Image 1 (cartoon, helix red, strand yellow):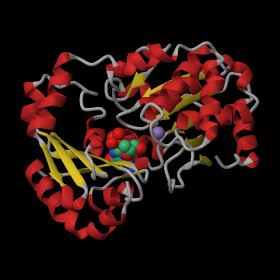
Image 2 (cartoon, rainbow, N blue to C red):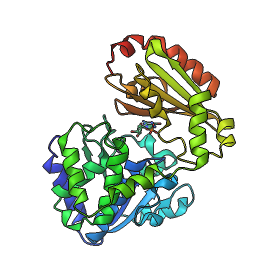
Image 3 (cartoon, helix red, strand yellow):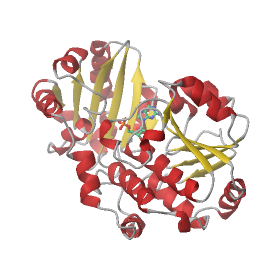
Image 4 (spheres, protein in one colour):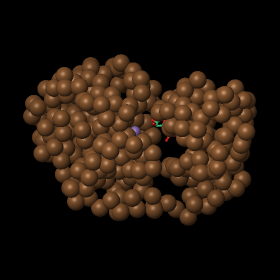
Length: 344
Ligand code: 5GP
Ligand code: MN
């Protein structure tokens, strides 16, 4: 990872050395393991240092992240918008984690746009929007959770780290690297994990909490999708899985059930571009993954109002699932040159 910029670390430190500062921490909408892990991890550390900290989420995250210490204190804008507004009004500092654009704050966008106190952004997505006073952006970092660890160390706040914080940060690194499968070419990521293990965390337990915690319905849904709702385009090195509302209802779908589905087609020989389309009310949510050079964040921003990383991105489209699939099928030949060029 590149060196942290000391001027940014010092500016951040000035904002958090005052005792009793009131801090709100905000991860992106539909928080994943890195978003909620880095938010709660950072909260544990800053609370121990004597600050008043509240984690606020735009909406719910999956049940398999609900083992993290203190997660019951998170306030959700989706269920208690007034309280979130109050927490923001009463705060001195806002720390945004794991997103690079205000559009990733969903229904809280306007609220965050109008936030008048200091804002710090810590993130690993490329091309951050210039909405914060201090932007600590490291796209080369495996996860925001790893970046939080480096920032905490640079701030000389490692003294406030504890096991709860280490568990949360470990979860962020584990989930954003697909259990250390990708984004792990930098030895520093494993060194960071080594540092976290020193806090006595049980990595088998954490892995199990996240990945061995699915319902039977979810496993049957996965089987059904792979069998009935996957199209493979060998000539384009691409595959797509689609999840209709009908299928979701059939398998009693709950938030998080399709987590990881998009990765499966990448295990097919010759496939290095995978897509998952999930039908929602009046729109379709898209997830993209790739191996090699094919930049799915470009594909997402050029066609599906989205973005993300080179090999993992998402987006959304206000169209029916049928229209979305038609659009996708027509796009594959357009991207053929890039798809063929990509090695996997
Ligand atoms: P996922 O497919 O797991 O939802 O998201 C993969 C990556 O794409 C994550 O880094 C996430 O932050 C980003 N991402 C997902 N959905 C969107 C979206 O609608 N807009 C943008 N800009 N990024 C997204
Ligand atoms: Mn992340």
